[in-house]
Image 1: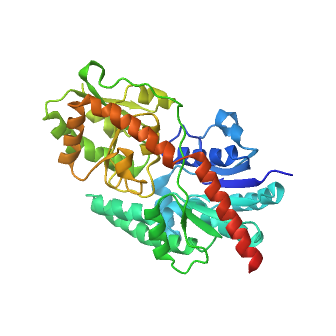
Image 2 (image 1 turned 180 degrees about the vertical axis):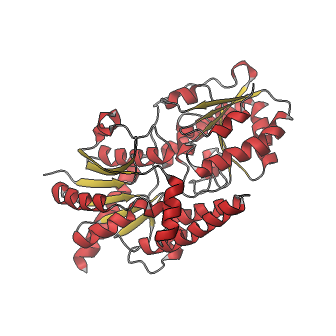
Image 3 (image 1 turned 30 degrees about the horizontal axis):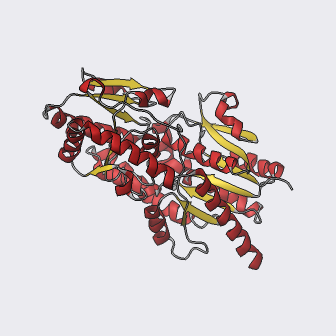
Length: 410
C-alpha cells in the first residue's frame, strides 16, 4: 500500500531558523511527515535566499520545488500595485505566472492525495489548481485573519501617510480574503477566534472554517537557573522585518522601559531577531543589548528568565509564545499578542493592557524568582498538552477525509 502524499505550497521558505512564521509552517509540515505521510514542498523565494536543498531541515520533504524569486523592493512594488492593480499589495506581489505554471506541472508529477496552501498569500494558487484538479482536496491554512493585522496597524500609526496607506490596503485585503475563503475545499484557522471571524465573513461556505491548532517541538527536558546573579534577564526575540514586531518593540522601548527603570529592579534586556532595523541601536545601553540574528535558538533562550511579547497588532497565534514556553521561559504579553491562545490562564502567560501594567508584572517577577520556576513548568506542560504533532496531523487527515466524503456523495 503506497503512502499518502501531501503537497505543501508556501509563498516563502519554511526553514525554522528564519522567524516565527517560517517555524510555524515547518513544524506543521514536520507533524504531517512524522504521522507517516509523504510531504512534497513547493515554495517561492526572495532574492538572495540561500540554496535551501543544503539545509538539514529539508530532509523531511520527499521532494523540493523552488519557484521564482520575489523582489525585495517593497516600496516600489507597493506603489506599482496601488497604480496597476485592485489586489492588496501583499497578495499581488506573490502573483507569478511562472509559479502557477510550475505548480500545475508539479501536481501532475507528484500526484498528491491532498494539497495544503500555507497562508492567504498562496490561496490564489489553490484557486488555479482546484479548477484543473477538481478531485484533489485543497486546504487553505490561514495563519491569521490577514486584513485585521493591517487594520490594527493603521489605527496605531502616528504617521498620517502610513495610516492612510495601511487602511487602504486593509480594505482591499478584507475583500480579497472574503473571496479567497471560497476558492478551496476547506479553510482552517489556527485559533477559534480567527475561525469565528472568518466564518462571519462567509457564513454560506459549504465547509465552514475549522480550527487546526499549530504545533511546536523543542527540547525533551529543560533545566534552567533563573535570575543568575540577581539580575532578571529579559528577552525580546522576534523577526524584526515585520512592521508589527517593529511597532511593538518601539512601544516597549518608548513606553515601558522608562517605567521599568524607575522601579528599582536589576534587569538586562537582550533583543534578538533577523532583520534588525538600524533605529534599535539607538536604545543600546548598559541594561539593553541589541544582539540581532541568532542562528541557534538555544543561544537566545540559555540566558533568558522572562520573554517579552510586545505586539500591538496581530492575529492568529504567536508561534514565538509557544516556542518561549517549550524552552521553559515564562512570558509577559500584550493582550493582542496572547489573542487566540488555548486556555491562556492555564498557560501561565501573563497578559496586560498598559505600559504601567506591563512594567509592574516584570517587576513582580524580579522580586519573586520562585514564580519563574513555577511558570516555566506550567508553560511547558500547557504547550505539550495542547499543541502536539499528533493532534495536528489527525485533525488535518480528518478534514481531508470529510472533504473527500462530501465530494463522493455530491
